[in-house]
Length: 337
Image 1 (cartoon, rainbow, N blue to C red):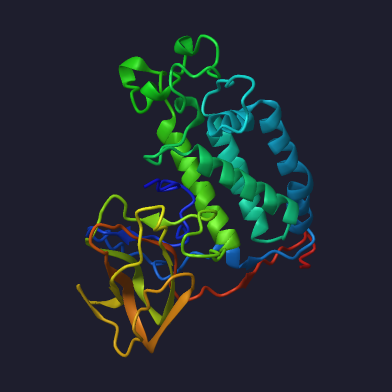
Image 2: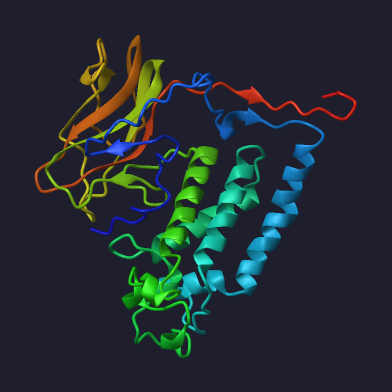
């Protein structure tokens, strides 16, 4: 099965997830301000005389110009060559060109959290679709290390490229070989950051469980196993519902809906069933809401049993409490808002 975007544009990037294996609890830090919580950027309303015009300039001028520069440099054409969309010309080698594209995608996504812009939104959708075509069977994506050595659109003298080039250079660089093969994890990191920003800014619902235009979290290549995904908090949170949208691309792929699913909550060091919770549906093509009597807990988890011979996944898992909306207050030199 081709599980695209296994390493990028994960739909649940809005929350910290532990999926499928137990992890140690982070050390508890007792500090005078430990009760303070971060404010999610997508819940901040920016409506003022200072930042609002600058966000508009970023959307209308700065970010489009930078995307134009990436086009002029051939960095996006490189992706089109790898995807098979462009059959003329050669790859133009750079140091970490994907990181530049992903930084722009991240910046554009941040602005969409505060200002709608259909043109910018469509441009991001096109780039995400292009990266989906480029990503290989194992989930790897980095335009400098994708094409086989005998591909006719490789750059001339590719073997002499100072920073390394070609599929055989993936994760081969060592300190003794520096700078050959450098920056591959650096590029992946920017891909993750762009993915998280895009999801949190747009929060799109898939068209169906087999929708590949959005991203997902899958357990491939695990098959027929018991798996789980969880979110934990340092302080108890009040919740009365969760939402889940399953990913299943069978036939055509190796992911099917789970045989069964249940919803435990964290109770001390144990995980116990959420009291009075509705059954967790395992049907396709719908965002399911599972309600329960309000409770305070430091964690919620979805546990699933995968069908024998098949893997499974999740498009989205929405875990309340829903953050409040915060209004940004900017003061002028005179003290006026």
